[in-house]
Length: 320
Ligand code: F6P
Image (cartoon, rainbow, N blue to C red; front, top):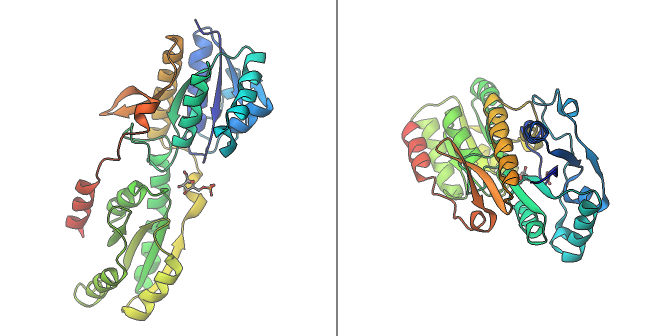
């Protein structure tokens, strides 16, 4: 059976990563497996920035945002010679397997390492909820709560001033944060990669909300990378009765103490990762489907198309 494993966080950080590190470490140690923390993602693996983790070392972190292991993006990890250096660092320390907490880019690295003889299990750690092999990713719920808090506040001031708040949220081309926030905040308009961004149509709808519905405010939530929200807010001021103001929520969405849901999800997934490694399984990623913790081969997971969010969008439209 596997005797020594490593754990790392990679890509954009997400609240709940610490809870996952804690779960992996404690479940493994309680099963007689030693655990090493690999710092700064694959970069630290290549450079040998690797230290043992203890039960107390992962204490007092379940409620902390960010990742105690640090994170980085290392595009060079695609290069086999770079990965060979990483494998050497692991072998030198007797580390036989790794739990990789990150997004789909990190999963590719995990599969490549598995192919080189280091069993890896991926855990979905990203606020974007853009990993199609799981219903929810670790960090999504917390980021959503952050967005909802912010938009609720924006609504207060928008109503006072007869304004339209144009709010840009993250998602990396996945509209989940936007549509979930739209429903939870009672926004007037949501734009995602699925709905598209039809400027003239949106301005027309805003005019209706002002003139016909006599709304005191309007909230427009837009997924990042769709349009320049500052420019759009100016057009709102010029073409509707609202004055437009843009807010880019940005990296605020990535921070903060994880919600109970994210902490529990991370703990359940961390446990599953260790169980898989104990069975000698690698090249899989953990997910949650219909509230059951599952695992899927990474190769397969990376090719699952994103399910349509039409139902959520329809619900949103019926609530406006
Ligand atoms: O994947 C997480 C994420 O926060 C995306 O939502 C966003 O597009 C991206 O990372 C931002 O990356 P960076 O932190 O490198 O600016």
